[in-house]
Image 1 (cartoon, rainbow, N blue to C red):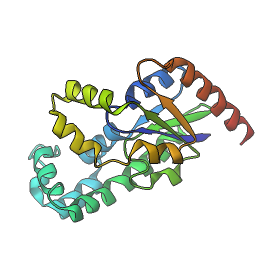
Image 2: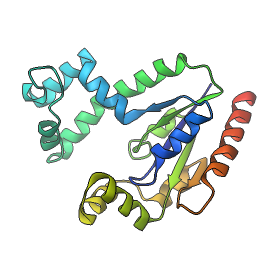
Image 3: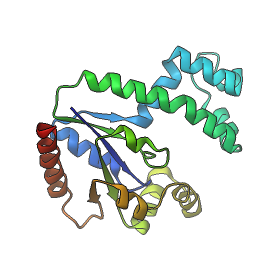
Length: 198
């Protein structure tokens, strides 16, 4: 079974694209959602996060104290890296375990930071979703009720589209004009072909 990464910058619409693949019967692992689940439920990961950030990292009910964690990791690049070094291997292991239970030609993992964290080496193929910068900014401002400045700050933390496109196996343009379904169907057919020949 092929393991396919689906990525794109903030506001590119990668989650929207992932839902289209689901409609075609392809199982999708949403990395952000699963990382949150693991940080709340995985005993080993919770213990490691407490060792790193202290007991305040969790509320008394055992749920992750997100505002506290964010306040710690975003003021220190070292802590952010250390946190990533705990969470990413747990997500990777969970994705592998999840993949083995799927029955399809390929599976998708939707993740914003595949290239930023060198995770592309774990996938057979990678799809990048792109959209014009202005459209991305508008989408995120509307979705998160953020200012243009806040959105740009988040965009600037990610690898530019140009670099992602150069590294990708497939590119989907999600600009509101180019036929999205046609692109997804073509990639779906190609991935099934690759999976058969593997």
